[in-house]
Length: 216
Ligand code: 5RP
Image (cartoon, rainbow, N blue to C red; front, top):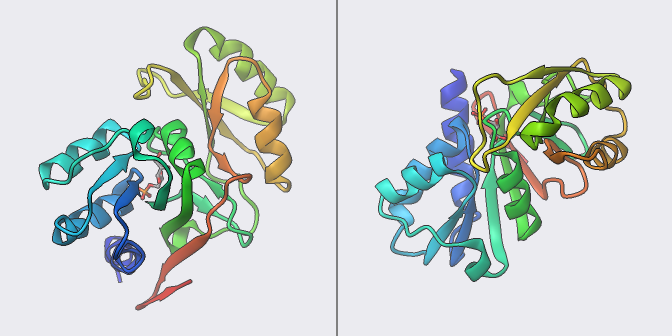
């Protein structure tokens, strides 16, 4: 199976989790894009969706799904999103697509976080994928120096701004053996908006597209 076929397969499996759910949280990325396409068949069954990015909002609107503000939606029953890396304890690295802050907010406000990945995302230790850190623009160089102290090599995602108007540092060469601690340490740096470690609010269910099967 190609990687896209694996993504489609795992997206289809996630549809089972949104049946009967009034408001669905929707993540960002190529795997979630397949999920959004499939959500079109259920648009009459849901009240709407809460979106994690401008890109996802546009896709949802294009297929006729109302996009609701999180502030008025209340608790979300189910949030479906992809990831860049997943470890055996369901801790994640996210934010390759730059939507980490809104993704983290929706994950926090959701009762169930269903993470959909193909098997290439599964790792024993997080950190091979460069860890995205969203920063307030004026703090970028300061945060970069602090990330070096934490053992990483930050690279500025040049000419890129998040939907919140902030910048991103992609931090290479991190071997994250304690994701809970590392998430907290990075968030404690002044000027950091969010980092892409989803360790405190990790996934509840990880669906992995593997061969011709989906593993849970
Ligand atoms: C976006 C994300 C995505 O979920 C992550 O990058 C995975 O994307 P893809 O499904 O395209 O591999 O965190 O900010």
